[in-house]
Length: 179
Image 1 (cartoon, rainbow, N blue to C red):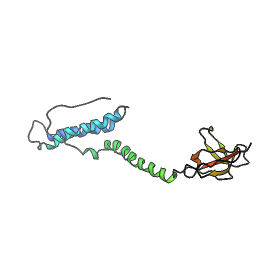
Image 2 (cartoon, rainbow, N blue to C red):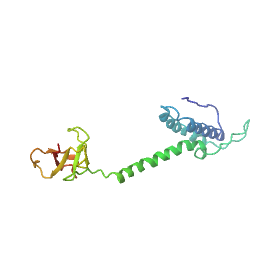
Image 3 (cartoon, helix red, strand yellow):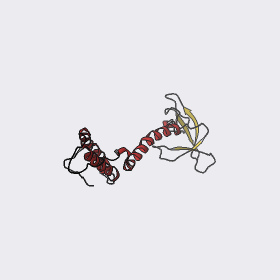
Image 4 (cartoon, rainbow, N blue to C red):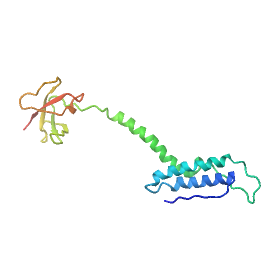
């Protein structure tokens, strides 16, 4: 990382040319360090102050040498694409991920159908119940019913499934051990 500055008396055209060239180099080269991700935008914003002062100057007249050509504006230079394309991709990716999340997952909890067999992929305190074929060797429990009223209990030695497996996150399923 380096910080470059150029001091001196500038006419409007020479100043604009210098600010545009240095800003273009910053857009191209300024992103290559871990701290540069934060410092580069600050540097570009700091370049707005001299750019604004140079724009207010009158056109150059006379002088001991010809003025520099200001060149193309910064947004029309190839170096700006290095900055604008990734920013555009980020601006498009965030809403796209949000919309994808809305379309793919509806956010509702899974329902364990009565009569289905399940196995617990987690421990009992942190259940991860997966519906599987009742004849499969990994089948551990059969869903015997759902408790939808407060205060209800499962029959006999049935276990309670975590409430997250109900359609509204509150219905509890009763599980009968298969072994």
